[in-house]
Image (cartoon, rainbow, N blue to C red; front, side, top):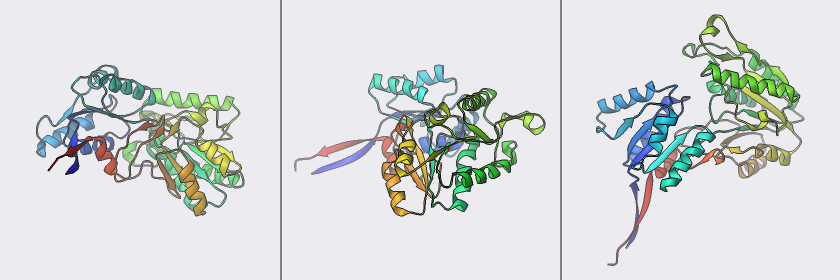
Length: 348
């Protein structure tokens, strides 16, 4: 008799970012606990309170003491101590490529598995036959969600040259009409996380101007009045971005959409795959053959057609190709990440 069974790793470490402190907490801790592990989580220093509160609620709900633990602190101290600890059996990390490399090294030193969900430079690819009434709101939401501060943001717009002018004008109009304000006001666009992050985004815009790109909408910081209580930036649309420029290659983490034209499907695939990232992609077309070819040839963990899910629901496996990481969260694959497979062989 031969059989297999899934068993927990033991103690799993979880290091999460600030941008979705409740959602990412849930999507990494729930499957780890469900597969029988005990968890130690370090939240981002910019947003630690959500994790602490959720852990207290878990205790109140009856989760055994010690099954879920939260350690606050800075990455270079608390994070390094956690991911380098000899009693950790698996690491799950969501964050930047730079920190992901350090965590991968820490896991490799002890030969333990690691799940890395890192950055993205995700494209929305718009073909000539796309339904513009569906495409425009999809593209706009894909970059303005969380003010672009999400690894799966649709930060590149690759558009067929025949519909370029029409699409850019419609997105410009949408950006010009975006409601902006504090997050609790539940408007279309909220602030960036910090002055440091806003300054970083603005530096990309200055560099793009110097490289010949054209700022069609936005491009400025917002200050004074209601904007004086946060780090606000206008939604920014930049046209004629060279695919090899910093704005075409690097993750900005802000409400900035970089536009590049393509001539045909081969060039669309080339541009889509022309960065070191491969997290999410959107394809906008009425042609089913084009859609399936793009799903097949675009190097991304998720490819949406005529919609854009920004990592999708909890049932959809999520993770990256290339520098966007490895391993999968969500869905059945996310459960298996937090378990190891054992084979039993019994001679009867």
